Image (tube, rainbow over all chains, first blue to last red; front, side, top):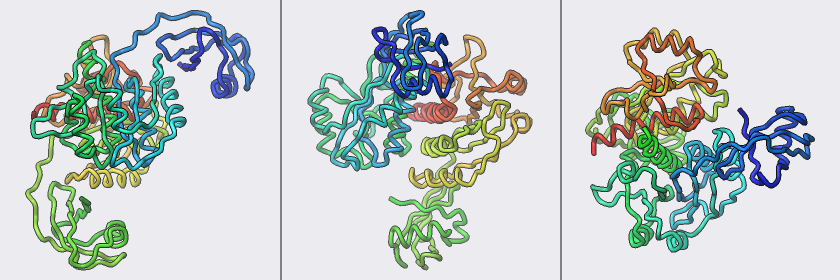
Amino acid sequence: MQLFYLPQLPESGVLDAEEANHATKVLRKRVGDELWATDGRGTRYRTRLVEAQAKRAEVEIVEKMPSTKSRPWLHLVIAPTKNLDRMEWMVEKAVELGVAEIHFILTEHSERKVLKLERLQRKAISAMKQSLKDWAPTLFPLTPWTDWLDTHQETGGFIAHLEGDNTPHLFNALTANLSSWVLIGPEGGFSDGEIAAALSKDMKPVSLGSERLRTETAGLAAAQLVALKNELDIL
Amino acid sequence: MQLFYLPQLPESGVLDAEEANHATKVLRKRVGDELWATDGRGTRYRTRLVEAQAKRAEVEIVEKMPSTKSRPWLHLVIAPTKNLDRMEWMVEKAVELGVAEIHFILTEHSERKVLKLERLQRKAISAMKQSLKDWAPTLFPLTPWTDWLDTHQETGGFIAHLEGDNTPHLFNALTANLSSWVLIGPEGGFSDGEIAAALSKDMKPVSLGSERLRTETAGLAAAQLVALKNELDIL
């Protein structure tokens, strides 16, 4: 099954250039052929091509499928790595595992001070389609840590940071079916001041386990732990 | 901290070409400087350089640290993806999360029929050093599914495959502190015959959750779930 992303549905069924090319050139779809499309906001449509040129393609809706509710997904807050490839694959995998939002933060020890979202957004959409999801993840631009904290103090997020010996494991700290915010620092870790600022805003320190994980692996571990918590609750 | 891999310790402290170059050229270590080294079999050594040329470097042991016991790590059995990059990063991440062995299998729907281990092995060793582990993961060459099953029927492995509605989640099926074998098929899935063969050899079907995961993400999910099971048991 191939899923197309048409964020303007149901108002407009015009495919963007990339989707049009994929439908007509790669998959060789013609007028009258059916496509599955998602609006990225929980609704999937069965559609039919009414125009099918490489540079301009458009569908009409054949059937609207029952909408899927947004799930209590993860809001991942992470300092991007210097190497952009590592962030790209983390975004891809986090989307597969069902992340809702990724917030990029600029911290004292951040090696990456500038971040273009465009490639990462493309990765995210591509992973959404590939894993047949109907919710498009949202990626937020790089924001200084204190600014981020100031505008998100109500989240009660979890910060990956060992605070003494009794730091709970994220898996145990999570509540199933609640929106979870998980904050991951850069390779060099959060600074003491950044930790203090987070704790003063009611962020709760958690452990991701005893292994030494790279930033992007920690992000992925968080995504997996939130997914697991919700999965096991359903069983 | 930098960790060097010297598999011939304690008999020989000669660094291989790559490690010698890293020590002398990148880190600019000189005779008399200390290095941390692991034999990859659970023991770490404090060593001192007695020869430090770019092409030939050697250490002597200053102190042998207490050996770490091998942990009940994961034995991951997986059909490699067509795109080798995806396997490389999976190997890296699985090693960070503590995988013991990776067995590559050739299945009916495998897109990759040939696999050179060398690059993957280098990734694995590099991840071991980077995450400061003292156990070198073992990678096994691509083996046809039935051959693999014939020689591993005593493992009681878990096969990622939905067998009816009541397939247990891998996390629930796992036992903490026991060696776990997890079998992951190719993108196209195991064939019916391959599943039947596995079940006849006492492999147990498990679910990795309701998300549609790529092969490499499934491998990583398995590594994370085994790590988590053992972590939570320690807490």
